[in-house]
Image (cartoon, rainbow, N blue to C red; front, side, top):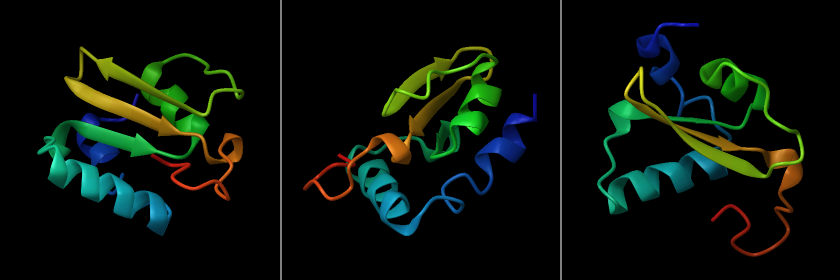
Length: 89
């Protein structure tokens, strides 16, 4: 598994613009500790963080990685109808 430092670095920067804006908005609104938050739109990357496979049918997932002390979020864009209002929320 990659070091947690490398996973967190650039996690938000690698997101599509609309997803990144949403994440930044919620981090600010909810005063979430961004240094322990990992967000991805890549199912394979989430699986690497988790250490197991995730069904491709899920639209999203959240898990607290206790060993790393990090919150991991998957936004599986192929399973989300972005034409629907507030689909990402």
